[in-house]
Length: 223
Image (cartoon, rainbow, N blue to C red; front, side, top):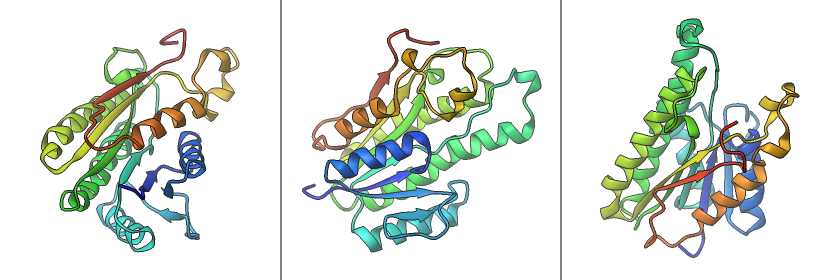
């Protein structure tokens, strides 16, 4: 893939913005897609990842603007961190709808387009909670465990078509979520730029290289 056309889903969030900025700076052609995009400038599209029709429409528009998709990066996410007995059904459903169903819908659409074109790369944002048991993470962990399983199956089903899927499991990343919690120091966390650098390194690898999983954590590990 001499010209890489990239879609970053969740491209207006803290991590997504950093990924979009990094990839554009490195010369990749990047479209940012997110629910809060309304005007749809040339480099951004609206998408509600919980709606099948919205996801399909976004991919159609993206390829009409930029050409065939090379790399999909799923950064869209929703988190609620409460004990299971205090977790509302609304928060549970929203966590699964955005983090798991949204990832599935976007990945499925990408695979449908990539499989007849020689392949492509799909990168999913995971979490340490997809492989560690952490209190207050019931809904979030359930959704991220699902993303882990989905990514593995994508790799197996996609290998014959040159489709490579990566799970990027992240430790604490300093985003707006942490800015209201002064007891945690940014120095003990990953920066969004750390994440963007890692995603870029995966995104540019040739398709004869599989990167099944990367675990990116700050020096102290799990906070």
